[in-house]
Length: 316
Image: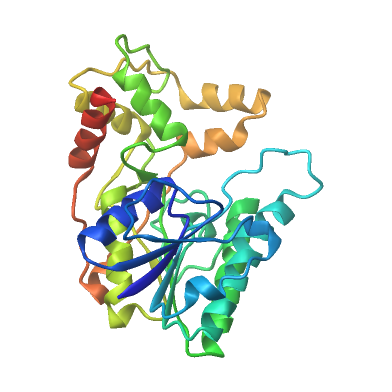
């Protein structure tokens, strides 16, 4: 199968390219500029800045499936008039531009990496694909609008669309807050954190599991025109997660049992309420549809993925 991948140089993209090579896919990628991250067998197409309405026609020639990972997760200049407009430029407009060009090129399938944020940013009952979308933040809204555009495009063309909504993804070289937690646990002296009494429940997904599922979606006929929530098997609290990360380094986490209500109050005073929601609230995902419809199951456990991460951290 011939696939075109966007976002190949990112955290998820690099892991996906490595596995696609192992499984003998014919791989093309779009890049802003040439990179030496990949072997010569990976064809690179320079398309420039994603905000400049790029022409993907050359890269789409003879492609069977597009895997669209590229997106904007952050806006550095938060003083811009509209955060939502900035997210829309890449997450919505670029996505639909690429998909429309894929239709013209007679691509069979388009896999879109969306976000669990389309369902919402917290819950008390597990999210399902049939839930009414409730995106709360500009990033998630822009992803939801892209989903709607893709669904409409699929209804009026022969393009098969697969939408994947993962929760937080973790693995080797993970960026962001999870990466900082790994650095915390891997440091010579683990500093205490006031997170010993967080009794929430959060579902995550290991990078190896996400990569495995995306590849399943390229091949499985029943994935066509479906939305999937995808995750590891288990949910755990922030406190349990920190203990697991420390254990992977053969260390013990020093977690102080500070009441969550105190920390939420301080977070509000500091203007960090959104961060507090991510840290203290629950976000549970039911990914049984992927198992029932596609017969897909996680290829690794959290403990196994964390051990790979800590081994990589020690060797770096």
